Amino acid sequence: LPGETFAIHVYDMKERKDAVLVAGAQSYALSEDGKKLAYATPEHSYGIVDAAPPAAGPHHPGDDALNLSGMKAEIDPRAEWKQMFNEVYRQERDYFFEASMNGVDWAKQRDKYAQLLPYVADRYDLTYILGEFVGELSNSHTYVGGGDYPDLHPINDGVLGVDFDIDSASGVYKFKKIYHGENWDPRLRSPLTEPGVNVKEGEYLLAVNGHALRSPQSPYELFENTVGENVTLTVNSKPTDEGSRRVVVKPLPSEYPLRELDWIVTNRKKVSDATGGRVGYVYIPDMGAEGLNEFVKQYFPQIRKEGLIIDVRYNGGGFVDQLIFERLRRILAGMGAARNFQSAPNNDPVFYGSMACITNEYAASDGDFFSYFFKYYKLGPLIGMRTWGGVRGIRGEIPLMDGGYVTRPEFSLYDSDSHWLIENHGVEPDIVVDNTPDKVMAGHDPQLEKAIEWVLNDMKEHPRVLPPRPPDLPAYPPGPGN
Image (cartoon, rainbow, N blue to C red):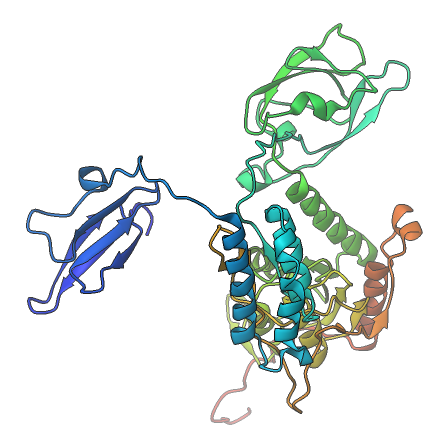
């Protein structure tokens, strides 16, 4: 709960009493005889206490933390690499979704790749070998990575959420486009639109922290290691220093969320403008928490539209497709009426209109599932390109001894006729439309345009409007003259 901190509790079964054993600890392990407990805190402090209700109140990590400053371990990298290779072999052997391992002789593959282990020189080599090894399964969701890499001390590059242009006469950079965010959400903060900054599109960036900026120097060169830091920009409405002003901004680590938001807003406007506001547009970026949030944020405000386009292109997958279908599959069952209110579906929220879904070759994992079930539930046509085709899923990463990881595909999908689905093929759209580079660069989105065309035509051929309130009831029982 908000405001709560981590704690390990102990429960006395005889006295039926609960007590805090260690305040501030996050994880623990019991000794074999159950008498001692080793704990760890989020700050990587460790301790050992009696696994019994404390007589003098909870233990605190600062009171009895172990001093591990002198602890050292001798590492044999080659022995670790061999152990991790064998661990990956065992994990896939014992947990892969089918014991026949996609028809692959898994032990034979182990023996083939094990011959390369004596030539491994670092973790990069091992990761490559592990990737090729699990790749022999010809299966999605077989990932390897992480581990004991050298600390390369990477720098960060701050960004402002803009497209730059260059004034050809002076070489000064111009703010061609500023991506507007939602500044109440830290993830969608747009530095140049925050209160007090007041920078406009078409203005010029003359200097960064007092360093003059001119082409051909890259503007990003002056934003090294500035993420989240106060940076002073010198800006002007003309490409000269006269009349310039200074503003302070905090650069972002990435512009991706802002550019994705701009894409969503632009697509929604395209749909609205092309349909006179009659058709809505909902983009679902993944099938996780963010995807659910975006669905709620976009779907319910547009639920009374006559048509709706669901877009799952580039969907990153997850596991919540059926939660979304619980909303999309609702059908109008009746209307509720009251004297002083507008009538509404009695099973609201329910969408009552024409629907289509856009997908492409980058809709992956649960994005594949969503595309498949949209067709299966006959909610409307699937428009675009065949999806990625990877649905044998995982439940997180399996840690290896050096901090790296491997994944093991444990789950698959088959239909009601006992046929395996989607993997290594994808979901075929009902209407094939490719967004070729020439059309996209010319400002077109053929897939979205086809969806608009189809929905408008379906609205014309099968108009759906909420049933009006019936006439007032006559007197009951009927009296004379009624």
